[in-house]
Length: 394
Ligand SMILES: *Cc1c(COP(=O)(O)O)cnc(C)c1O
Image (tube, rainbow, N blue to C red):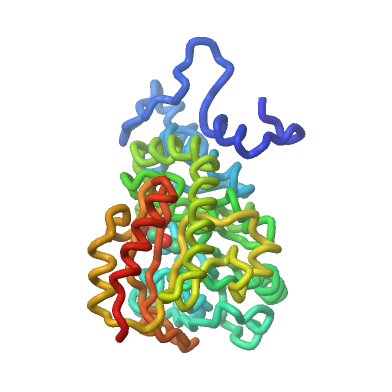
């Protein structure tokens, strides 16, 4: 129905991927296969399944029809060879890194990386004798000067966590390809709706599906999408680590996909409305949102991405820290908590001055990260206006 020569538009594709349709008397949504064990009629059947364990039900950790359906759906969106579902975004990321890194190797990781990934590098990878160098997200083709003979992986995240710095993905990919280095990107912010990293030459795209894919803040899920060349290594690492996703979570991921583009359009529109309004406010020093023309990486963002999501940050003018706490605590529509990508708005302070290692943060005021949810944008604006009114000079 959905053959390669008749490409479906994204909205239609999202209603069809990862489920059977067209057969008589089938439920719209496929059943959730809760299984560790799959039974076979004969040893011959069992051994045949064992020969290709990732192509059909064999053992729960290897995959169930539900996890395979989720994997196929994400793979279609990312345009990869195959996708592997993982227990969380961190499970996906750690498996992808360990797939290519060995004792004595060196990895280049962007300095605006999601903080738990930095910790993974500084603790786990360091313990295994793998050295990490953090690099400036603006490095571009100059990444070549950081490459060593033992560099095996360049890890990207664009926009970066906290401050949304944009990377020149094609320029970095070109250097990596010349030198036989694998590239992994965290595609959580854009989702494959707004960025297709593999089409830019990236080898492996990882996502925290916990965010927009699941979309309702009620499950942990990750995905690793690989090229034909890198798939075996990544599949083996996720298996060796036991990082498999559960069927229930994959089902929630599939459910989230059905509304992904509709939700993202609303997140995008509301976030842009508020970002532009925040730029006009006296309390705000800068709005860190790649889709604003004022943002330093905007031109590169426009070249490579087809849209933006609901997550951005504001740097406030220097003010009394206690008044920032009062603002955050007093908001009615913005929850205080980790994660994002659900239907609800969230707010958290971020501290680029504490986390960055190679690029000094030049901001002077506090930075707040906002996730703009699906609430009425007028309600969110009124809420933020009231909050900003509580700020007092330092
Ligand atoms: C949340 C997040 C992760 C980690 O995902 P989990 O599903 O929470 O493990 C990775 N990268 C980015 C950019 C994230 O925001």
